[in-house]
Image 1 (spheres, rainbow, N blue to C red):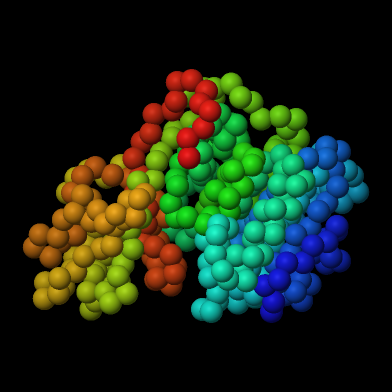
Image 2 (cartoon, rainbow, N blue to C red):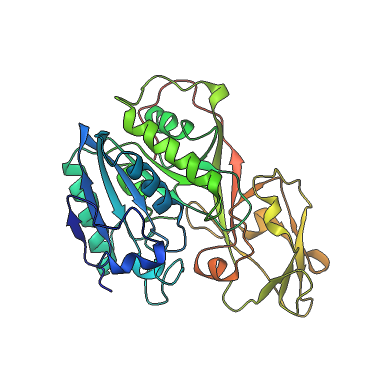
Amino acid sequence: MQCELTVRDDCPPGFLEVDARQLYQLLPGPTLMHLPGRRQEPLFVSILLHGNETTGLLTVQALLRRYRDRELPRALSLFVGNVAAARYGLRRLDHQPDYNRVWQAGETPEHATMKQVALEMRQRHCFASVDVHNNTGQNPRYACINRLAQPFFHLASLFGRTVVYFIRPEGVQSAAFATFCPAVTLECGQPGEVHGVAHSERYIEAVLKLTTLPEHPVAHCDIDLFHTVAVVKIPRDISFGFGATATDIQFIEDLDRLNFSELLAGTVLGHSNPDKAVRLDVRDEQGHEVNRRYFSYDHAMIRTRTAVMPSMLTLDSQVIRQDCLCYLMERLPLPEKPSRDKA
């Protein structure tokens, strides 16, 4: 399976019905499809940047089936990402980089492919960008943005009132597109959830019908804004599990129920092996190690040192190894006035 970009002006026959695991039979690899619509400036939608996150595919299939015999309100440029990993129901294959970490400078073939996609969409005067994702833990459905500007707030709040602002990790699709158009990442709950598909389908159709994105301030009552301040990873030499396991770290068995909960200082997340100096790897937005700011390890108990809100906690050990244990967030006041921007 190649990683070179295929560009076409239609959907291949069978695309609207195919299962994600069978996409490789229709598409040779990453594919950008330009579909016409009443307004020419296209909405860009990326799906399957992670091959096991299937809500995006189900969403566009449902939407395009409804528009099979009528014109889309706006041109739609659809990017289908990691077809090879989707074949096996995996986030990515072992030899691949993460398809949502290669949208900035880099030397791999995947970096070159994503650079080509972004350049083409910039030249087409992209109206807005929507990257559709799932997560593996218990999380609400929410939108993420990478710039604090009013069109981004409006685009995100159309999905729901919970909005997360982040600048790390680097190399994500939404951050690359945010340099030339409003962009959001949608977190649509776990793969296969019917309500997540319906929610994202309604959202994408609503964005297709927009004529402009407002510059005036979004109403404070329409957004709960959070800021991702740190990412938590588990060092490679540390084993871990959930519940009663013979590992270096034994997290509580229902750890992911803590997502989007405002945890008090002293909240227990798990226990560690008292014979091993176990520490989590916690990095702030500048990449600085800030473990001691957020966690304590007294008496082999892993506790929060300060009030914080986690997101993306999952019980999937493979996803944790490939990505992270979680992100830490804090509430962020909504700007009082329209801002030029803030990266």
